[in-house]
Image (tube, rainbow over all chains, first blue to last red; front, side, top):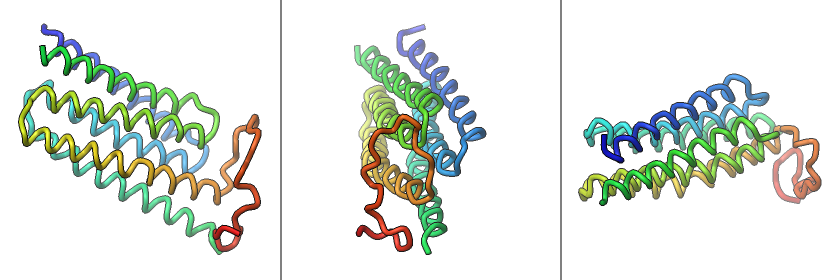
Length: 90
Length: 115
């Protein structure tokens, strides 16, 4: 194994652990805003995972998925926060 | 040589992603959690994509990576600001050791405008 393969495998393990931690916060999180922050971070981690997975399998197709996930995550976060603020405004 | 640099950059990025997830679990209230996750995850994902661009050294892949990095750097502060604003109006409880709440009394509770 070359250094890059070892680095990619370790990175996949680290990103997997962080996905588990984010899911714990998504399930536990006391307020709705905590869950929205967790979902936002989940999308960012998905982009990182897609990039590392693309290197591991030597395919470049998956990087387009990252662009779509980034766009959708931002739209979702803004929509959630907008309606939460509308709910508290009289 | 370029593979070693790419591997180091990707490892650093994955480390920062792990730091942001640990911050999301360990920090005491929403606002400190957001301060941990927004900055560390932006840096981490940016470094991972930079390592991807370094690995292939292809103009198409580099363009995609740069587009994603630019988009993340533009949208992460906006998203964090809008969640923080919604959380403050939703009366999410601050940490018990919080010393100063500088926004207290500066917003109109009904219309959410600055006084």
